[in-house]
Length: 71
Image (tube, rainbow, N blue to C red; front, side, top):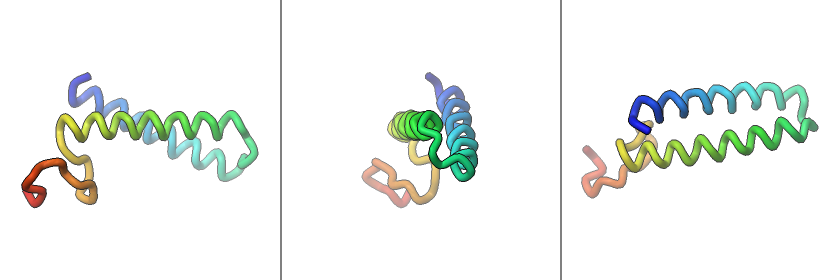
């Protein structure tokens, strides 16, 4: 995946996670939704790690792997 594809997929997964989170606020016992939420969060974490290894941190509060982290 290239940079744009990773960002697009990550944005979509983050949207699904927020949507499922809102759904689970009103349906806390829906086991399928809980499993899907956990799957989406896991996949988003993997993509976020993949992106950050290739292109650097996505947010200001994520540490860079660069030896000169203040850049």
